[in-house]
Length: 101
Image (cartoon, rainbow, N blue to C red; front, top):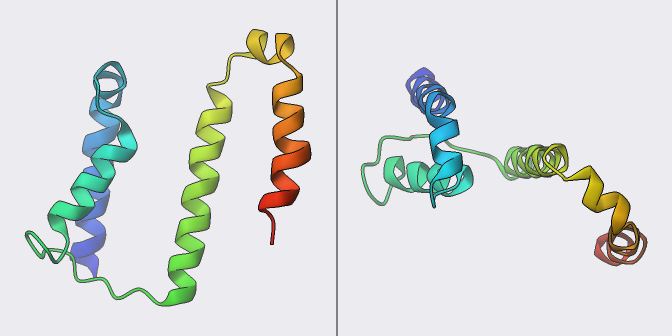
């Protein structure tokens, strides 16, 4: 388990050191993380031996979604949002209730 954690932490550290260069390229951070997960997973190198329970996977997915949405919100252009204020209002006012179970 500690080897898995060290492997993932090492990739996060490596990614954080090259994040600016990745931002300017055609690749994105999420694509690199998916490629890394596929590479170390059971179908390619089989280096990762995590056994994740259903509830833990749900929590991990929700945390990941929260981080991605926070990152997108932090990078939003406030001038455009002020100028086009109806777009987020419609998305939150109509889309959010429809998406909630």
